[in-house]
Image 1 (tube, rainbow, N blue to C red):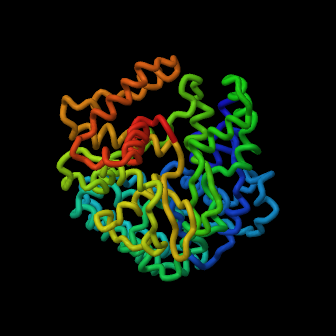
Image 2 (image 1 turned 90 degrees about the vertical axis):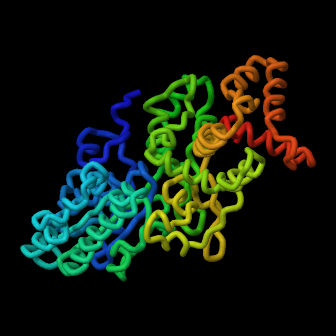
Length: 449
């Protein structure tokens, strides 16, 4: 199979098309957004779901590079013949390295708001397309530094006020990000901002649907099925279990696959470990996750490793109910409900729609393995006594014993789990408690769904 046709991490639409790579055509949805002449549009999605490619597609469309759209759904829909000035700002490039000395940005000759005003001064009305990718990246870089966070937020707030003041020059304004910080003047300055993050019509704008996997990647998946001596249906079912399950719209009906994980599964295929945690292991949010698990488990209040820690983690998959208004409240990460932060970062997703809100949970097996194994490795293990039998747990060894039908080793493994339980807990008072503890211990090591 020709792996060079896979889009992988290509973020440039023109490069993707001219190199003949696969483009999953969502230009009908892009068209419905691009014809908007009045409202600024905001979209929140987790990292590596295709936000940057989406922004690049808008850029090519408004620059009238129509040759790139031949054969796509938008080809016969797009009637706008004007060529616009396009300002594409990738704020991820303004992350920690360029913002370490925040005060430098206050240089009179290098103030973003003033530079934007200068650009607009020479433009006619309705002539500028402003595309802002990863608007929150400079803020997220300073999640742990209140002073720098506020300094960067003030700079960005001034910038968005300047954008608002020059709104008559704008033909189209599109903003992407991961988190939604309400007090950055994006949301306060633009009182007509159209937030499509939870909109049903755009639930499949990023991520792959089942139909898109069949349409664009069937040959690749069929080839992998042959290598694994299994069926195409079996490959699809395993992909669904491991990488599907994301839902970003209020009705809770549209599910999409993680694009990064699907493409990595194909391009990095390894028959010894095909369903690897590609997206989870590639992220920059591991500290965010661990801080969440520690806070969620109230470790400071727990005197010993206990059943309560596991029950709290398990509730991620069952008991999180949030109102949709709660997703839009926070002005900074320190004030943000950690469950909301986990949803926006892609570790939780909408499971079921409720009146005014939704039930949230872990999207799929990839994330479940990631959360449980990291909980065991980074949260639970460090507080275990050195002589605790739980320190000896090893998922690979247990899997090997199962594959070889080594009944004694399997029993010894379960014995390690049970011996690691403090006798003064309530686990031994009910069989259901003990069964759940063993089940959760297996989850720590990614050994069950």
